[in-house]
Amino acid sequence: MNHPLLTRRELLRNSSLGFGGLALSGLYGAPVEAHFQARAKSVIFLFMEGGVSQVDSFDYKPLLAKHHGEDPRKAIGEIEATQFGNVGKVMKSPWEFKQRGQCGAWISDLFPHVAELADELAIIRSMTSNFPEHTSACYYLHSGLGLQGRPSMGAWASYGLGSENENFPGYVVLNGGQIPSGGLDNFSNGFLPATHRGNLLNALGTPLANVKPNEKIAQAQEIKRRLAQQLNRGTAGGVEALESAIANHELAARMQLAIPEVMSLDGETEATKKLYGFDAEYKHTQTYARECLIARRLIERGVRFVELTIPMVNGYQRWDAHNDLVTNHSTNARAVDQPIAGLIRDLKSRGLLDETLVVWTGEFGRTPFAQGGNGRDHNEYGFSLWMAGGGVKPGVTFGATDEWGYRAVDNPLQIHDLHATILHLLGINHEKLTYRFSGRDIRLTDVHGKIVKEILA
Image (cartoon, rainbow, N blue to C red; front, top):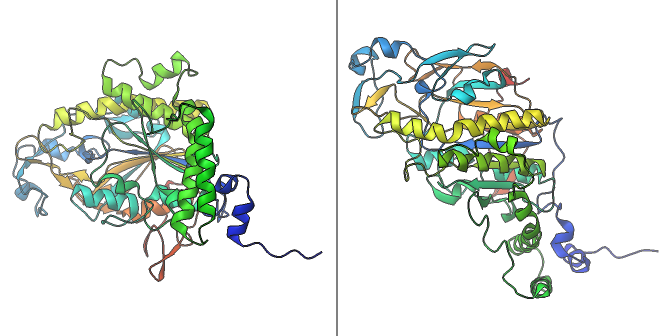
């Protein structure tokens, strides 16, 4: 017996839950088939907004101590234009560097807990950015373009692979207090369907607006939802914005049950909480500890990409150490160091580190000379980041800056290379993950990007 083919709209009309019954459909984030075997199932992105100084953390340059206090134009030579043009003297690191672990990686005392895990890290010391200003650099790091409006790498990961749990979105942002420069557009879906936008959850307080139903009668919300479904189904098909809205409404209804459970830490042991730093005296350590533990719980439940923002240390300060480098970096490091180390240890003990890619970076680095007296200006010419787990070779370093820690000279990398490598570890060929927009196929890495094969396990 022959049956007439159903249109997409008719299929939805006949589905009992609308888009809710198609949570893993193409629009909502259904995975395209991976291009090859993935090494990582998910990503935890630890974004150190403001710009961590590479010469005070992961890039040891003893020459700075030898020439401390000298004119950098005479000691270093040609100086690039800086963001604020207030070039001070060559400035040694206030923190002592030591070789850590069996791999012997040089890491400073700024991160004592992370330093203990040197043998788990793949440290890149030759990253560069195209932008010296926070907003453009944040957009560039997130989306591969220094302008707002493009999809974030988390949105691309969600678009390419979807979420493994229909009750959660593919891309979640845990907010510890500071939304990065450029605002929520850092987490944008851009021209991708709206279902792939980063979903913001507050680590403290109410995690999400309306996560608890406002209706006093239990059935009232369900009645409203079904009425909205009926009205939406009567609209002409093929309107992507409407269909994304329907999908998001259905997801929101499911999240009202899922989010309170994942945000509740009642089932976590006191030993686990202590590992992350819940018992720390410093309140910002407690905040970031909560973010890191919730991140682990989210990836356990199939969320593809989880990004963490930093706590509101000393007001709106970030890692942006234009003056008083010691106070700025000490307080920010104190907030994140133990929780990050706890996250890596916890993932490893649960067998999750091998399938979870942890990425730590700022949007750029800082100068090896002072800004004015005791700060450091922005430096896009060379900075450090690290990765762990998820198919990354542990205990390695790649690339190098010059003897001052100023410019990347050995295997310099672009942000596009970072994106290509992240997608590769997720099983995606960055050249094939495209979306047709404005008359051409666009990808996260644009026409650039090479995989950093030297750090792959």
